[in-house]
Length: 405
Image (tube, rainbow, N blue to C red; front, side):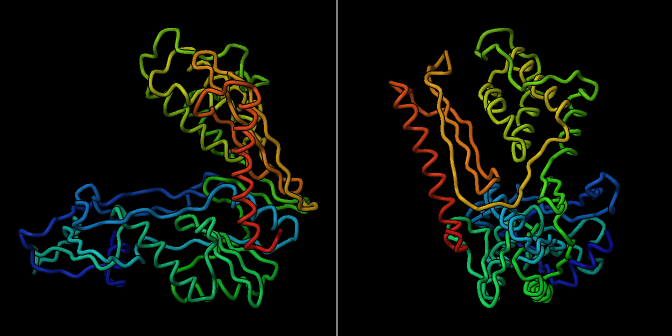
């Protein structure tokens, strides 16, 4: 706690000012967390001062809060390029990222518990920089990083504003997901130069070759890059108390789900597991359709729906080490599209599905029910093609700025 408080003081996060009845005073608290490594072992114990952002008032002490994050498809595109051309691929981390954003609004906060100034106990903190918990903290950090990268000569992609490109003198790509950063490019020297320059502006930690990113386990080999979520899947099985479940060979059974049958007594567990499975589809396209099915019954889940969720978990138990390979190959862009006509037997809507390959690597896929009823199988197929074409158009725009099409 003392170390965190000293860091906040050193960076000039706030200054003490007299309290006023006109101030909307925001509370704060200490949050303690155990940071773990990718193998589950303890890395360090961390104390963090967090503002109670729910005390803030819109238009008074915050306005814009949205902060863009990298799309999964963009991450897979970069991994494909890195694997195909043996690019430098490292991961960076910014220590206390949200503390580097500057606030444009007047935000007043209580003094931290346990660290009240004895001579000015009635004073409050006027924040100059953002804190974790503030509604505008993610946006303030992104604005600060955006400005810094532009000053280094980068430009942001219009298709994915979390992707930054430097083309002169060497191609360097930076992908941002809040405070986790991927840097890649054909020249390791150019990438190291950028890392050094960023280190003069922020406390950057070079974590070495990409190995653990957003809960995704990354293994780089001579054959390519392997992406999996084995640790996350094991935690999910443990949460559902299904570590010893009998595996099954398919994620979907023969019985179609509907709104019949007894309601679940406790739907919270169902919603929690179904939501957690959605994140697992980042590296497991084989369960996308099954997860899409169970997520359609979040409002009033029934016992048959819970059985469907457990079947997906049993399937995961037998395929726990599965993941995605990103291998070398000729980088053609190929897509496939399909649709079932009136596949949902209680609302008669069709389900669209597509997958997009960049070379030999799968980079995008979807299984989603169409918003309206199709009057024919041809109409259902055309709607699915339209969705696929829109995804391809977006991917082409990302590749165009990288000069790969």
